[in-house]
Image 1: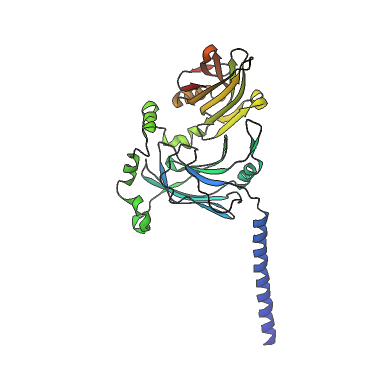
Image 2 (image 1 turned 180 degrees about the vertical axis):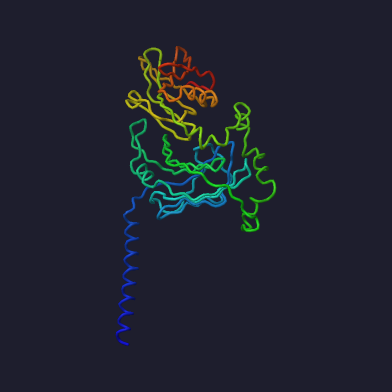
Amino acid sequence: MESFRFRVMVVSSFLLLSVINVSCQSQSKKKMEEKFEWSGSLSAPKEYPVEVYEGHLISIDYDQNFKDWGTINSGWGNLGGTVVSGPRQKAAPDSLNITWLSFAEDKFYSGSFALPKDKITALLKTGFTDADNTKRSFTDVVTGLAPGGTVVIWVLGPGRKVQVAQFKAREIRIDPKTVASHDSYMFREGYAERTMDNDMVITDAIKSKIAESGTPEPSDYGDRYQRKYSWKPGFELYENGKPVNFAFEMLNGEMDLLSGQTLQDTDFLKRAVPKNCSFYWKTDKGVEHGIKITAFDEKEIMAAFESIGDKSATLLFKIAPENKLSISLKSDSKEVVLKKGKVQSF
């Protein structure tokens, strides 16, 4: 009998030590995790609003809840609001669980995804250098939701946005009888249609854009906008002008800024097609000018890049006196003039 009790005590002690060891390892891992100041946000195309039914961006010590954020259609890659909650410093997110309603399609999509934590951690840790040669930090992890179940993750800082992952969620059906009462409004007949007809959601500006250039194909966000081409900016400026910086946003939601020697030495890199851009330049007399292309014509510039194909090309900006601007996409064997788009001088 005494022998049996001794064995029980030994086994119990071993189990207790094992639990303590696992707990200590877990606590140690949490302490070893590098922590950063970041917030989670949502994004959706202006033409394709969404609403999250359930959603969590998760790190080892933090859970960003996306439920009750309302209708989101801030523009592809743009912040759809931020929530300041939880610890100021937290580990990089490692997973995403999300279910949402796509209003234009009147469909629900859902998915659980493992994020590239090491890549996100490296960006949050390293940051980047801005046009003033100032060290900047990435501050937001943005989840983009698009038609067809496309999910894209970007890491965002002031003037720079980097895509780190792309996923495909599955279409699902949710039985309205199973949802909580406070979520029942999402399942009322006509809810999606009424949202699409709401002038506060699909504004006059969005309607004008759709009238001018049509609505992007739902598949574009997961396919066409993701395609990258070998290109760089180039400049032919009067009075021996020199570019100072070049900021650009791409159709895949990424954003970058080239300046100083980085702009002078930039080489052909695989990049998505530009959506808009702006740049400053100076004449040899020190007079500074600014040009902003608020929007390239999407169909025109996409067709230009597709016609160049896998050849390297320069997006060439020629400026004559009085800031007369012409833009073309030029490879060694072909030059396509871009005649459309919205331009401002400043």
